[in-house]
Image 1 (cartoon, rainbow, N blue to C red):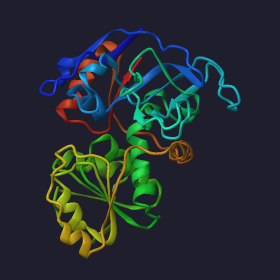
Image 2 (cartoon, helix red, strand yellow):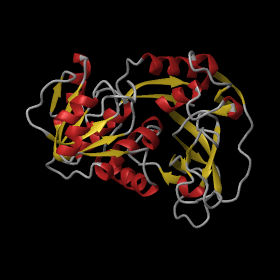
Image 3 (tube, one colour):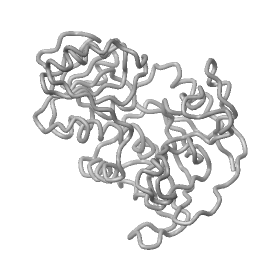
Length: 330
């Protein structure tokens, strides 16, 4: 089958390690299901894998892709409503609770130990297959497994905010950031967002932000929680912007992971710093219901037709000038 994969790893020129070509079809495995992929989104995790972060040269070739949507190949026994030919979306965290793997297996994301979603077919534990929200296209559904699940877990689990609270989303434009804006707005939160780019600030307002500010700007008031995925460039602003007793929920560090910690302010103001990687299967199920009930549609920056277009899709994400998600359609 055709697939997009890391042929090796290259820390200085990650796109040079990207390849498109034939890879083996998923092998049958007890309590796993195979899906014909119709769309997969490109994530920073894919670029980090090409750089050798979380993926060694010895593990290559490795099919990339950490989320996707498609059509179920065979019925899933005992799982009501999931029949062959059904449109599905995938939870791609493996080993979080033992479903489909040996007891005690370390958790991984597809494309780390098991082949990822950027292929004509992908296999996941059967427990990780969910019906696609009826209101979404395949391309929209393909954004949910990583960015949207991460944003949902950051807001409602890690930050534990309530309707009427205020959240600050650092760095408008990325997949997690745009998802956080849309989810928080739909849940009745006041949403502040920052960006160095005026166009991105205006687009953030259009998808639900209540106010958008230049990076580092003083806010009208302190916030109950900060959604932090930028890292070193925004960390000090996050610490200064959250109220005493508030939470900074962290899922990434695209500008570096070694900011000044500002520990005095953290402990003196009882600030809670909570890390977050994607989310639980239960969070994913709730996210799917929320998206369908509130008729939310993920923001998509661009779509690319066919796996052969993967180098262009990856180059666009690597360049950084995106607002929303990049999706490859099969």
